[in-house]
Amino acid sequence: MRQQKPNATPNEIRICNTCDLPKPMSSFSKRGIHYRYICRECERKQNDERIRLDLVVPEIDDEEITRKKRQQEAYLCSKYGIHLIDHVCMYVAQNGRCAICKTPVDYRVVHTDHDHKTGKVRGLLCPNCNTGLGMFKDGQNNLLAAAEYLQQAQRK
Image 1 (cartoon, one colour):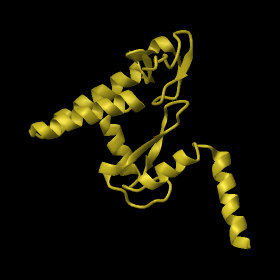
Image 2 (image 1 turned 60 degrees about the horizontal axis):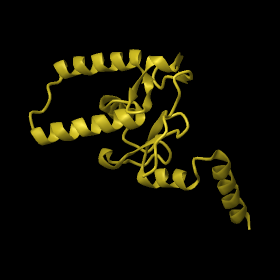
Image 3 (image 1 turned 90 degrees about the horizontal axis):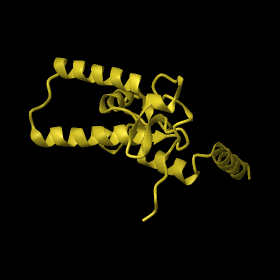
């Protein structure tokens, strides 16, 4: 099994994915050996907002739904530094459509696109667009070269 390395050192500066402010690593929580991409201050505000919403909108009392929500919340927080409510709000802001091709996409199959260097979430994509970006290694130059190739092929 490969040894994991921390995603940052304590002396580094990181930009928070929520407030976009540069902060020292001491302002970020750790999950295992990895630092989170959201500062403690923003994390606290999000938790306060989530608690406020839970008081306004009571939880469904179905144990299975609650367990799945907790799992999804934990996954989104650990992988992308966002909460489930932020993810749902992003889906609603995109009108339930893919950020690239604009086709409607079911929330259950939506993919969370993020920058692999910064960890910042860029948007929600349909499975096809997410796979396409992955195949082009998220490189703008690769995508532009492919677009040029298609344009040249059309001219022939």
